[in-house]
Amino acid sequence: MARNGPLVTLAAGGVLAGGLLVANVINTADEPDADQAVAASEQADAEPTETTEPAPAPAETDEPEQADAETAEAQPANNADPVTYVGWVDGGGTSVAIVINGDEATAYVCDGITEAWLTGTAGAGELSLTGDDGELTASYNENYATGEAVVNGQIQRFTIDYVAPPEGLYQVADTIVGGAEVDGGWIVLPDGRQIGVLTVGADSQPAPELDLETGQVTVADTTITADRVGGAE
Image (tube, rainbow, N blue to C red; front, side, top):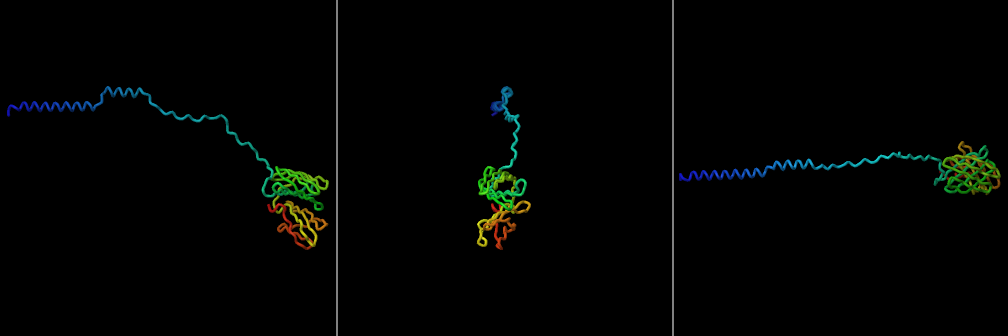
């Protein structure tokens, strides 16, 4: 047994040395090569880094924005509802009423003794009306009508304003009182005055005053009602 001691010791030493050699090899494999690390670093520094360029800003134009230069102008009345204009002719004495209803129009020219009913067309701001006793031409917009009437050979020029009820034109037509036919027309002016002619049978006279709340008037002890031409608007 004493002879085997050195051999056992030598064998143990050999095993220990082999283990240390294997561990050294493993550690060496895990550590990166210094030269390789330096080379990789130099290559990274040499390669350019790609950057994202910001989108260019939109080009500024030297042309300023153009402002809308249209100016408001009075437009011809083109309402679906009737519109009414009343007033005096130039110089006074005779009044004129015009009612436009779509593309049709009615005018009444009266001085309290003589009268004329005229009818015709309206459109594009122009009127052309005729009747048994004369004619009327005019232009109009949303505020007024201006033109001339020729009645019984006399030329009457006018500029009359748009009005709202109770001002306007009123009419009684085809009404029978005491066996006689009654016809009448009234122009109610902005100052409250009424100008008109009432005809009973063959007799014409200045029209009596209308009650503007009811539209009624008394003729030969009979109450009749005048209608506003064009309605209440």
